[in-house]
Image (cartoon, rainbow, N blue to C red; front, side):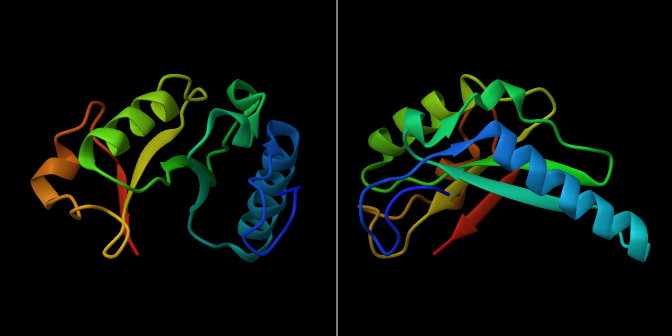
Length: 124
């Protein structure tokens, strides 16, 4: 991801960089006879992923666009709606809950009650 590392300003990643990573992982999976993998791409602002619609997974690499935002449940749901509004073809949805930053941490039911239902859920 380009931008300032270490908690500086929010950077960006372009679909071409994501697709290059997908191809590298796909090649490793094929060469080593590994099971399929997930590539999780975090997003909490619209500008974080440019040309998002051009991201393409492969049979060996499933892409998950993971809403990575914190705050109140309504704020998180608004972020999630923006993240999933323009999912690339074939991408799965992800939702991230925070133990410390969310106010309060959404329950399991509140998390799965989003549309579309998140496929991947993480806790930090």
